[in-house]
Image (cartoon, rainbow, N blue to C red; front, side):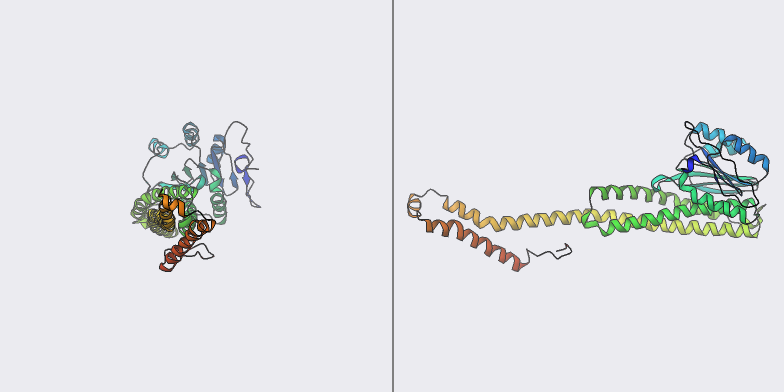
Amino acid sequence: MPESQEATPLASDTAPALPRTPAGDTEPAVAALVDATGILLPASASDVQQRMTAGRFFWLDVFTADATARSAMIAQLGLADADHGWILRFGQAPRMSILPSGARVVTMAIGAEDQSTEMHVLWTEAWVVTVWAGNAASLREVRERFVTRLRGTHETAFICGTALLLLLLSTVDDSLTRARAQLYALEDSLDGLTTADLNNLRSLRRRILKASVHADHYCTSVRSAVVGIDIMPGVDAEGALLAREYADHVEDLAHRQGALAEMVRTVAGDIPAVIARKQSQRINQLTVISAIFLPITFLTGFFGMNFQWMIGGLVSREAFFVLAVALPIAMITGTAMLFAREGFIRRRRSDGNP
């Protein structure tokens, strides 16, 4: 059964399994709930209220693009007006702010077809919530790993929130790895690029350049946020170490994105040169063909002149085979041999290269 239609309990021997919630035929899934007992997908507003009263740390992942459904789900958390307005306001630049009561993060998530989408992350002592619009299945592994993390130890909310950010960052890292492999494949096949390959390259370039634009700004924001993290309320030594690790990962990722953006610019810049070289080869081939048949053109023009003495003198069959058959063939063969000796005609190797 698809993930959007089933609650996926990952319950341990001691924790009760989460109840199943049917998706319904008309109501699409808008959110998922994750805690130490497992994953509930789809999750309803009543499920959020139950988790709020249970007193167990949980992650609410709101992934719908429906603004009304998104607002209704977030309202169950009882956010302050400032937090409620911030988490629903999209179009923000990537940034990270660590507050005494938790943290606000605007980062990027990977949606369908490796497309990045804006994600808002907010956590408190009781829960962490993510709001974005994308493919819920793309975070399946992140949810499962987060459940394992919650079961393993009784950690602080700051550690859980930072651990979630690291898991989200791993999806971006995997996406970059796939983009690099795709770019290498396109680079290796530049001489035989098809229209589909060019369209893939354009899409890949847009995706990489978009991610690269936000990467440096986000890296700077994260570095600023973790300065003095040791003295922040609710942050112990392990939490501070994990926050600095996250900042290092963000910096490494920004460096990879910058290198990949430069590579995609190089590959895109090589395409006009490849096209120009192919056009030059075609022009050279046409020139050689024209030059080979130029003697025949001369013979046709010469023997096509209507001089009566020539018409009357060239009447035998032998003259036809010598002048109309043997002479043109000899001239074509001689011209081709001359061009081959001068290097204008080269044989192709078995791999298709000249």
